[in-house]
Image (cartoon, rainbow, N blue to C red; front, side, top):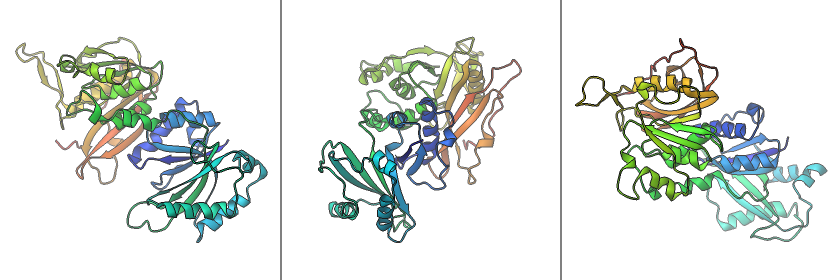
Length: 410
């Protein structure tokens, strides 16, 4: 299979590969682990094998944490003079590899330069261009805007005090025109530009990542049972899902004009989901498996406490809902209401574990298989866990959730 180079955004490092795996699954790649070797560092560069350029373009169009994806030609690393090594490797390319990279074409071309870990001046960029083109002349005319071929020199220096030398340099080629990339949605959905937000509104970028982790796409039926200001459902709807949101209180539907949940969807010209007032502790809605994905940010008591309907007093219609009970009820409901192979993606805040051993302390259910636990540090004391689970089998009457043993810290 052809080889490609992914250039990740240097944000949310723990989320990059889980998001990539989910999007590869959406693209029809069955054996995701055969596509790439698991990296041992936080490098933003990843080499992977994909069936075709079309699959690579789909990955670029959906992955929020990918800066770019390129057709791989060659690279150099570990040499005292990286560009000498790179020139030698380009000179040694086979005729088939040269033809695939269009090195002998006479169409217009450009050569772009970027370095991870250092901002290069124009003079520094030109020096690197000459180091390559003087030894390996490219045919055709140079054209900066809209050339037929765009090549890239991508250097990896790294970040931090120990990053003093360039470790690797890649020579790659841009794919044919990609009209939409996942990063475009990050700017489009910025929270600061949104009409209706609240103190618990999920970050727009993470909402998009959660939608990808859930493998949301056109035709999928998605639910957020703790909808709040619907940030998560905005992301799911953006990717083509049919959505339903629920909450124990729906104040966001009845605020002043142009400042409601519905106004967020109107702002992005997206279809507004249906919203239902419900109490998750009562096993609400859908007597049979129905949802393709459940994506939510449950109230865990840090910024907003959870509540459920009270059976004790009509004067106090709600009572406190312990975070551990919220999660066990959520997993029980997901196991019953997700279709087979449907996904549950939820968020949980807890105390930082110095050993990073969160997996064994999360709530479990016999029908739900954990896939990923992505860690987002909040402070030195707290982290947020973004948990992805898949429904592996149909639920029986005796299957019940097991509560979390995590130290939530409040």
